[in-house]
Length: 424
Image (cartoon, rainbow, N blue to C red; front, side, top):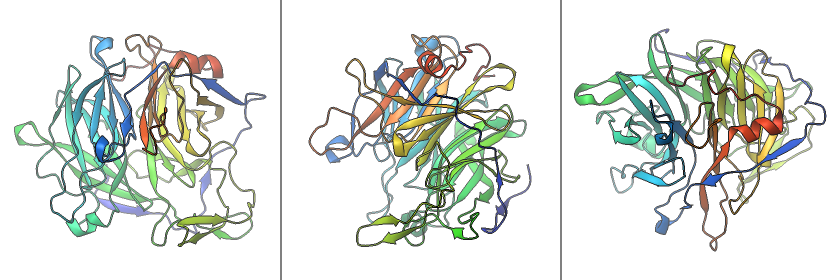
């Protein structure tokens, strides 16, 4: 690892863009179905301001049926579910430190194994600009966050209240330690954060370095394009995942596309795929609080409809596997090879079946290849941003569980239950 530094890419720099192979002939968008779902979460006072966002799976070391799914719910905190979708635990997000300060708001979660002999669930707290860290044992979580945990991107509480705080998150391990990669809301910045053992069994962290992705892009017509947003906001990153077999970070810049770069943030990012809206000029209308698009110059991709959101990896043997991305704008998921030039393999949506509704405007998702209870050929879990049945005008969300075998069958992908061990 290099010493603490900030690596910036000039907006006018020439971007290294990956190949864009044609879609599989006649593949189209396939349909899969959820086998079950978690209880509805309600984003209002009566529901504890719970708004589902991002899931992670913890694998029990010896009894797969006792594995759990961990999900963030913003101000609603953190929920733990069994493999039937039943709630096992709930952790409230931290209260605001003062009457005019922001309360905790849990955004993304990931699991890492064997940190000082313990498994950890690591959460980005967007409200407090911190990480919250939970030890996992037997499917039960315990908060082990260092009480002196620092802000990640801000110097003081007033800056935290302005909202440019910790946002997306993923974790990984290498020979030098256990790390989180955390993005900063309303900016293009991502930070490499090392987890640290602290007295009394607590876990802290320190920022090692940061990387600023581009915020403006040179187009083939000679113009420069900047994705539209409110004044003062840059195109942010949320969905991220690290390929731990190659130490490669994939980062979804919501209105731009999917980047890949070394997990240590020390290399040059490559744009793997672009959203369809890439290059479309737009003007922010303050009265309507929206961006008004102009004519599409045709420089965008063909698979991802903004926002590109949750990223996750299905591992196979011999370094092979699949990168999955939430195409939030059209309620689908795109699948790419994780190796080589990340060739595109197909697209699917999760549609209703058997009284369980489908998945819409999905943020986070996660997938594992190993048998997990009745999901004996692997499990895919996705956030559903519009859970039904409706209850008046209440915003309702939850998580959907889909057997990997159905996705594999529909898209002609492999099932490889022993080619990768998440604890390895």
